[in-house]
Image (tube, rainbow, N blue to C red):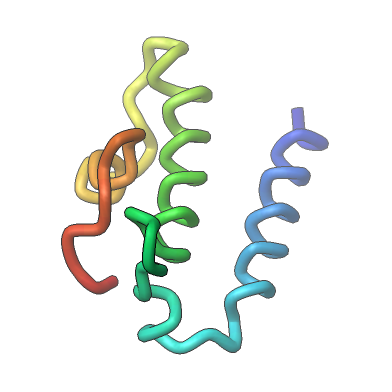
Length: 81
């Protein structure tokens, strides 16, 4: 189990490394022809992991709903993060 958790941790650290030099403006920019931005996609990846690991197992999510619901499939950015 710890190997799987380590993989999730390493992937999240990798994602953070990829965006560390991006401004808030760049993270929140929605490119023409798209519905979402970079920061929304990062939130969506965490939401998807919570959904697969907790919700589908019948367990409560490990984050507050305000960090979960806005990133469900079909959602779109409602504000600047």
